[in-house]
Image (tube, rainbow, N blue to C red; front, top):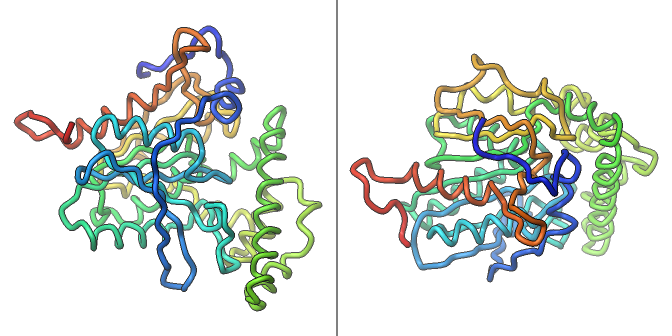
Length: 337
């Protein structure tokens, strides 16, 4: 247990989960956008927030159906800037407000775009310390990439928040009780994502890519993630079934290979998952620190004495953690102030 505890005015997993998307006054950092052309001639959009011309750089990865405009991303960018960190938020393909130009998009195990982004950044900044934070799906992508790359991971440290470490258990959990509300909303957003992309591909005359989406059939009758992932992710990425996708992409199986200091932050009351997703000690690399809170919801961790003076525990903890990781052994200032 660490030092997060929910305030009296925001108890329970659902209020913690819903506060930021529904009620938070959203920070509006002065970001600027850059488009990178990917090796398959598609694109990803990244949003920069830089309080100064140099300093350590943190890469932020959003969750399912989120973007760089998600309140937890923008809030963290502001919090990190106050500690002297530059940040860049990756929009997964099709999530920046403009559909991408191929049928492929993103999923929980797709790490190639993260690798590409880091390669491009390193070419520009050979000496800059890189760090990363991922939320939910973005956290799963980050942990899987860390496990895949091992000692070759080109970052100093990472934080992963509210990660669906076992995708199969999470998909089943979202079919139960009040969690079906989240499931229905997310599935509708994903269906709209595919429909918007199909329309865009047709407008651009990219008929071969458009046909790949038409081949998926009518997605409206789909009611579960098991069905969606079998049809859409399996159909586009070649997985034989939803289970095959979950087995290959769940980050829990990659934790032992992580060779960089990494914090995983998890709330036991997360309505997107069950306590069974929490890994056992012998599954963790010695460099992985697992922070378990009894409460916090999904990407919540909201605190503060009153609703009109709410705080965000992650936005204090993460900058401090990154600063400590970079602190010189003899002391001194870890990052520019």
